[in-house]
Length: 154
Image (cartoon, rainbow, N blue to C red; front, side):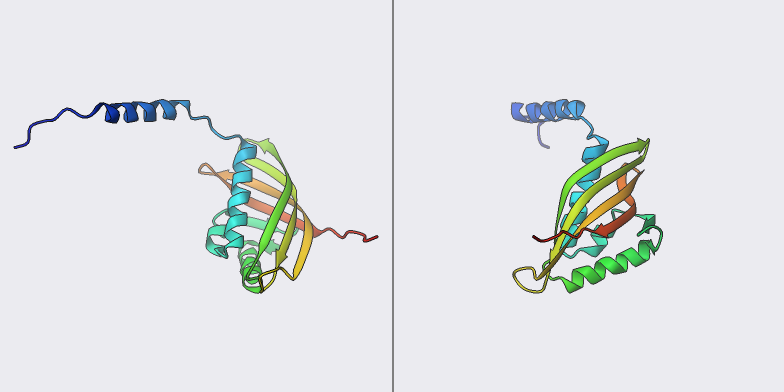
């Protein structure tokens, strides 16, 4: 039978520090949470992980002014990921507005580039308006509408 040995002081300090940090945890703002979801979606799309990307999309998602449901949006994203081996997106500036408890909107521009080689061979700038709902503590994309932005060349 082993005798009870005293625990080293560092174990006590680590446990105490962990409890102190837990008590000081400040919840992220709605804006920070929605932006984090957008950034996770961007990374998942760039890495071709369509199922992870879709985990941020609400079951009742509507896109393109009601013309696209969640299943069609999923197919659209699979097509984009397969057509563009090197898909990249840059979102800027992201403006988030809390509409009510559990609902938010975010507007931003997104520059999407892609292609099959090392360098992108196509790209497009879009203006995007999105709606978000909170579900079990997670912010899910419930609506997305996007329009291409065409720029005049001098």
